View (spheres, rainbow, N blue to C red):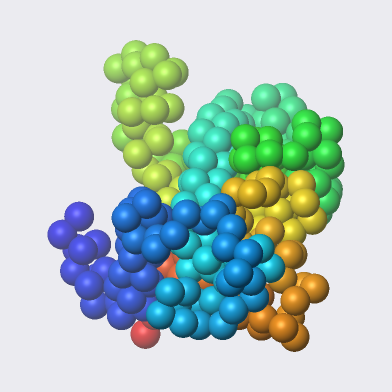
Length: 277
């Protein structure tokens, strides 16, 4: 742990992205305290205004404060990203452990199922699931969670295959340890590193997918703020109020880029073969 922290502190990209993500997370958690206005409150006399002392980033077509909606949109994006990745990681870890450890027909069955899910583009599969279940935040989380299960399954399976025949696993078998103990007490702790890296990268993809679904009207439903929904609404007012599309786009880009760079940096820190020189 000490070595990891030392390498982490020395990696400027990791530190910078971590600080940005902490700020975004704090803004999401403290949204009721930070946001100057109710994100759904309409001020008809202030429609499509630019930056001012009352509205720092301006207002939208209904006179709603853009800053407040972006801050609350961060809460939605992080909640969807973290929740969906938790679902993906939980199921993917179990499937990956079973497939990698037992092999044979269990491995074939699980991996063929994952291949079926992989055969569909991520956004199309998410669209199909949400269209079947209906729009909404909960269904969006479930859809994105299902879509990302194969990625975690393959990640964990590959890590299990590389360590299941090592001495400490064989020793656990020799002393009569039960299968559950071997999987979750001996093998699982040794696959957490690639799992954490994959999770950080998957969160950015989940946020992007949620934004795409909201953009198409199948994700978070109005009047709740969502970056993708805000961008979709702003298309008709780009010339009158360019800030409507610029600011949520900037917020989404910074968040996704930070998660991607943070995941790459953590991978470099944990794996010497990828360590930046």
